[in-house]
Length: 161
Image (tube, rainbow, N blue to C red; front, side, top):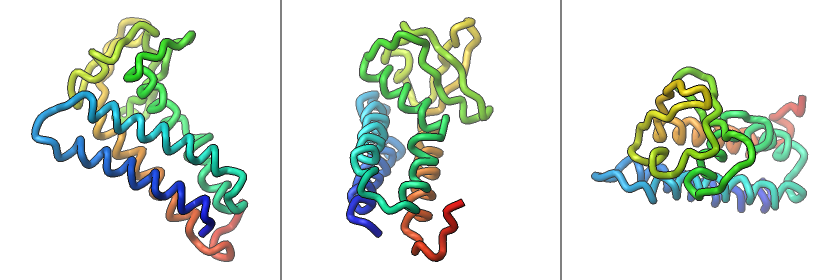
């Protein structure tokens, strides 16, 4: 395992700890849930900074989750809503329960998005969509930790194709 992958692993651990704090809290705290999404964003940023220092096999595996995975990209849009970042285009939110995604109005603020662990947000056409933050974050965690495990495999055990 490269030193770069080890540094990324630290951020994966921090992301998982943020999710666990949300999952085990006795009361809902929007800031904790926003922090979990922020930790995902910092993790992806760490991956981007370490990309050139990863081995070819590590890079190939992690690119699939941090660059090509549409679901992860939608969670990063959710983080932007929590940070009150105004996008020029409608953000896309993950609808893990249906395996789809929906575009929501640019004006959606953090208040309705983080009103609870599960919220209903209308898409740009006004159709309501249920968002389960814990389910989405756990799915992201699963995808990322699976990619990490594959990236840690010895090079001769992992085909590059």
